[in-house]
Image (cartoon, rainbow, N blue to C red; front, side):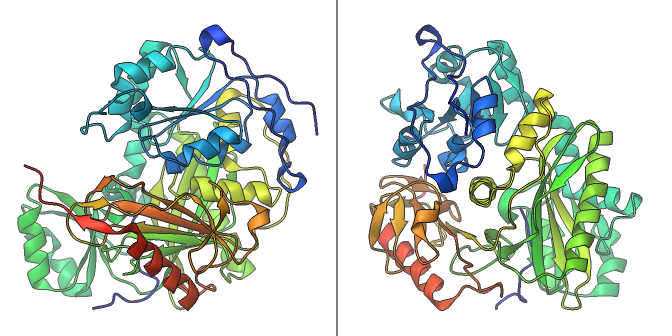
Length: 488
């Protein structure tokens, strides 16, 4: 997700056995009894009668989700040590790297993971009525799953892609009266089409290509020379220009049913462009669920979200989505982006919802596809929580040489105990750390670690607290990233 920076840029039921048999793959859970503080969705753990299969090359997106469903199956690529935690908690794991001596290095996407013979052979053992979730759906992924006979509980990729296109979505916002920043659509081969806009607003400007995850398609253009360089480096591109506005990015997750009923989370802060976390000035690098927003602002965000939800439903979309808003220093809101899919905050946000007794949006997403009734609202507001996403800051490919076990850590980065997801027992003064395992190769600005917590990482300011920033720097040092020569 691309963002405006927070500050101006810096120069009780008995468990029921899920469907399945040894012949089709034993999907029975371990029967682990959850602590009372975590036993908040027992009806949903019981009443989903088929396996829930979550497919993603990155296992971090699927951790903790096994707490919701008794037949949870995570299909992923690397044999990450944290997968043992998912299995201990009752989930079943297929990691392609466990079944091949040398997994092909070219496998980086969901379609490539699904196309591998070992992955396909495993999926063919699953009950055909399994509910399959793709972190990010594509037409090829859905076709590969249909060939196996599995149904996908995600929105049509063509519809999702149309909304995700930042250039197209700008026109859609304007056409439906949604609050948005001024913008111009520019063809890079004809830069004169943006001259009037540049003359009117001046620099800096935000330039967005149609697609790009985590800020990869978003560029801050500081002056005329950078604009000329962008045009030269991106020939034939259709981009959106908008003025840079200082402020904070407020985001939320939501779920819309096929009839347009929209369920929303509380708004939370998007941490953007922090130099200790990412090299991208407009790159997303975390969230803070403890931000001061007045009721009028929260209700305004929800009204806009419900309007977007109805628009999505009219176009054939249903399920989970995220919205990003720019909140300027005067408190004005502009909708800047939609993510018509699961977002990177999914595992952390789902766990926070579960720990606060809320109905997780992932549960609502599956209900929207299965036809099961939506559960009644309940639970307490999320009073705090945070997620930080650390990226490779070295500017070149690196190899992780440090070994950092997944677990709950103290502020001095001493391991308190093992773990793979947030839980109430860790308190507000400890941190969940997930780090890339030793030996993994990372491209520039690739994700290398995550830190999740029950407290606020920014004290609501958008800037990391000194203690959290020290933790980030200590973790980065302990990863011991070794620069690698370029690939031949």
